[in-house]
Amino acid sequence: MNPDAIALIVDEPIAGHFYWVLQKQDGSDCRPVDAAPGPMPSYGAAMMAGIAALQRRADARGCTDGSAAPTVTVRIDPRQDFGPATIH
Image 1 (cartoon, rainbow, N blue to C red):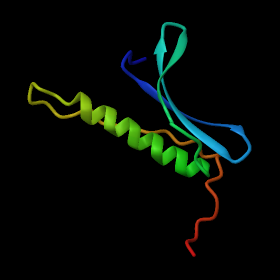
Image 2: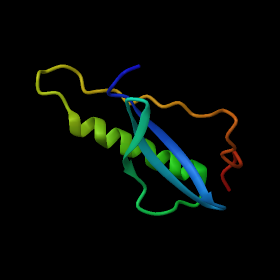
Image 3: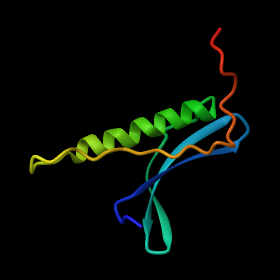
Image 4: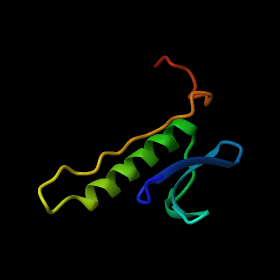
């Protein structure tokens, strides 16, 4: 396991209120390092906002030695329903 890895979790503590949380492994525990300031209307919206937060963290880390900036990778649960695939 990469000690610098950060997981993006989307939680729905109240029906229809989705929050993203960035968590870092700290020994055998996970600790939050960033979270949504308020609820989002859908799982997809919370996931996209969380991905943007991950990217901002990666961009802020940057690299001063001339190497490439860190890459954000995302794993999305294929069982999660993102809603209709059509745009009206």
